[in-house]
Image 1 (cartoon, rainbow, N blue to C red):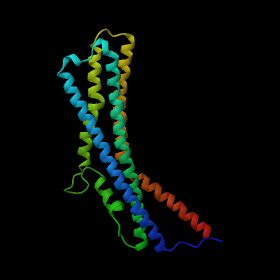
Image 2 (tube, one colour; image 1 turned 135 degrees about the vertical axis):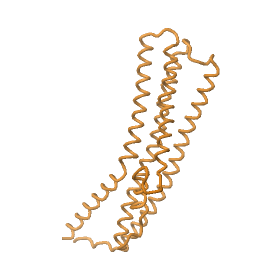
Image 3 (cartoon, rainbow, N blue to C red; image 1 turned 60 degrees about the vertical axis):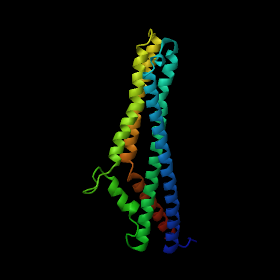
Image 4 (tube, rainbow, N blue to C red; image 1 turned 90 degrees about the vertical axis):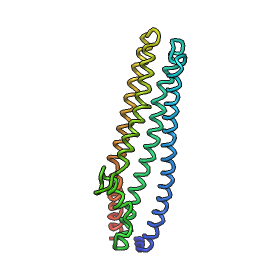
Length: 231
């Protein structure tokens, strides 16, 4: 015997409960995002301070005796920097997914009440995120933030490691092992920076809208299955 369909009021109550739950999760992710950005800023500031200190104390510059220690330290800079970059990216990814689900819930609720009662995630936010100048007189500041963040990432992931690798290349006698180590280090710094840029481009520029379409498709399939069961 088929189960009786859920009435509209019960569906609306369930959706509102889910809506509130997801908004709480969104606030939690925003806190995580700010913490991750702060960690990256602290790392970048500390790296800049250390670089300035070493440059003002020539006795601390790379030497033949500590060549491999400096290489290990230099190679760890892009590792740590990229981890923090993708830590920030993961929070943004989670917030985008949450926002997409919130948008579909708003659309469901609007369908139940017969009017566009909820518009923030389903209509307003996509408009203001869609480009550099979403509407006349409004500029999306995220573009400027992304540019400056890219400069910081390029400094920490590429400029500092490459500068240190150049110093190491001019320190002492370069053996085959050292040349290989420098080549690997330079290649990793450049590739890791490219991975960060690619990740931000894919997540921030191409993710929005796709989860929403997928959720709608899944919900439509479930609705069709429910109709088949009733009939």
